[in-house]
Amino acid sequence: MNGNIILTPVGVLHCGLRNRSQVPRNYDISDVTGDIEIFPDYHEAMADIKPGQEIVVLYWFDRADRSALKVYPRGDRSRGLTGVFSTRSPMRPNPIAISEVEVLEVEPGRIKVKGVDALDGTPVLDIKKKV
Amino acid sequence: MNGNIILTPVGVLHCGLRNRSQVPRNYDISDVTGDIEIFPDYHEAMADIKPGQEIVVLYWFDRADRSALKVYPRGDRSRGLTGVFSTRSPMRPNPIAISEVEVLEVEPGRIKVKGVDALDGTPVLDIKKKV
Image (cartoon, rainbow over all chains, first blue to last red; front, side, top):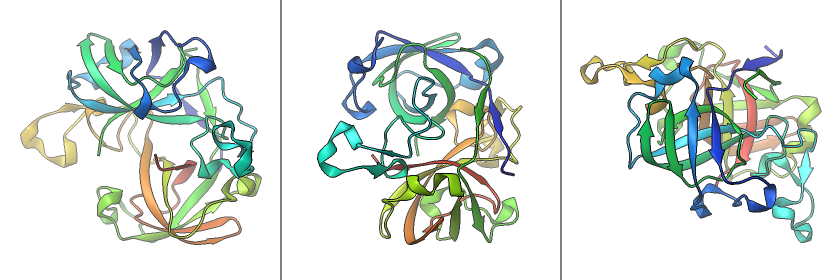
């Protein structure tokens, strides 16, 4: 039960964000557009995604530091070090990010979205309906 | 970039839900309480979690079918098969569940919560602040 878990990305994000300073702090303040490429093995799973929907995307932040257990939230040192489980920092033992984006267009194997807050090339683990 | 990703659970859920028929369909309709045990390596990361907060929990649904790409949402066949990326079904290639729970009590290595919608023994991958 405490053993390792193996995930396989279902897709990858393509967008213009190439370095961290360009990435909006969160999806709710992002107007950045991008394309989510869904790998062929998973095309069937995207069958009912339609333009105009808001969808939840789980990214794997592959370039995040997984060793930090406390961070300065938003880089603000005035509030002191905070346990990562009380933050949305990308730094955490399993850097899975929850994002919400608007679907602009859907093509086979590709979902064009708005509200991107992740670097170009970020692996996509899952997509869900909003609650 | 398309290679496998290895996760290590940061904790495990303890609760009275032992079979699927007992599990509420979603956290927003659950009054079930449970204990999230955080493993010793990650205790420091839970430092600032306090009673009364709502927190986001990412579970690993270790007993979910990872092969299904289309499902009948909520078991309702009248709406037809739907791509899993348009649902909240536990069945999906990477069965990571997003849940929101209320913190009732905090002890070293243990968070007592309300709003549980997962089986006893479910691995916990991450905890985050709500947006």
